[in-house]
Length: 269
Image (spheres, rainbow, N blue to C red):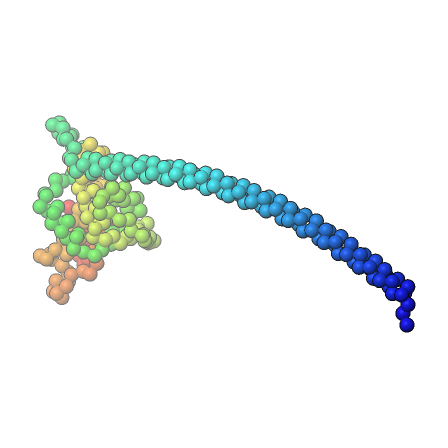
């Protein structure tokens, strides 16, 4: 049986334990409140720092974007200026080309003084070309796919130099050479027209040297002779067979024998 003194002692102990637990709970609550407050303060501080960093980064991006826009506008301005300069250069080049074409089209004035004849020449290679005959040659040249020119390399270089400025000249891609110091060049009818036009101007230009005019005249008459072989009324070695030579061959070399069997034979001038 529990005595009263024992019950009072037990209540006292229970009250002491209760007070201890109460103090512990209060201290724990206070500690938790401080820690939560500190966590809140740290979170707020970090939020402000993060906001400042983001604001600084955005401001930097805005500045970079503005600088890029300025650089882009400057580049566009430079490109526009370059385009204007290119257009001006094209206009100047086109003007120069037109002036050069007009200068080539306008015949050089001929002086009234007759040139003295060459004392060593047996006959004059240069001759006046009838415009009708010249137009007929151009028509024949325009009607062929290609022709083969056989001559010395120096002679071919002369033809290229004379005709390179022509509207229709196209430099052949392949130039073949044989064992006789000659080159064989396949030229289109269009290129042959450019060569004929250049040779006609050269052989009629009295301001050039006699040698240049003789070379131009000889080459012109070789082309003329070869093209005449394909004319509708030309006397061809194949006429009895109902056909003409398939390839127009132009030979600029008086050393070749006159066999009378090919349109490549040198013409009698």
